[in-house]
Image (cartoon, rainbow, N blue to C red; front, side, top):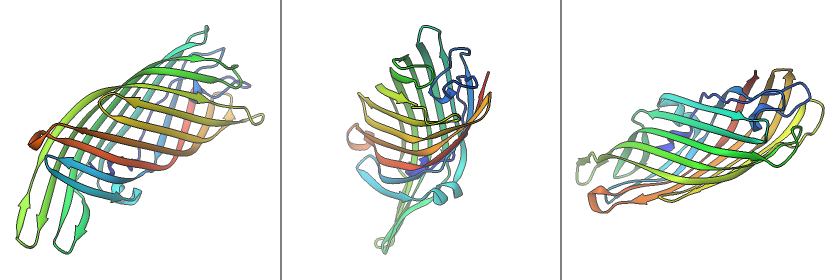
Length: 253
């Protein structure tokens, strides 16, 4: 399931913004309740992928993953009410074609992967509309399908383990967008998810409001996943770190 996540992701976010209000990336402003964003994440991946008793090391740059990316869709919808409460749902789908992700003098290994991640949460704004500080809690669902081809030279063999797994974790986190200037905000998000797996997600960057109803968030994102369930041939494991820059365009309405 390799660096699948070095994904370039195209996504959508819902929230809003008014000329002097906080950007929609952190949630809607006091005059609007929705926003829409399209963004790209250029992430590399390092770690291991396990199928049954086999663990395959992965170490791919963004360009490696991009070469084998078949499809990437990332969407986020958010609604914020006037009483500071809000809800959001986020969906990410990544499809990666076969790619040689590790080689040695005695062989090589490649992985195909399809991954779906869906999260939903309730949020509450503890800050002002111009500098929101949101806490949120919800669920994150994973559905991963993997197939691996492992080839060795001595002895000359080829193994093709495959399988899938799905699980749901509880998620908690926070978002903060301090205002830095007339058209600039900082951007910080951190969350953890736990239950069947352990996930850490960190985002840091800036938001530039270049129009009354449009802004551009950009920065850096790091996400780590640790999942290991099942025994013998039913074992499925993902221990990966994904990180890279992101760039978004947001539209408010």
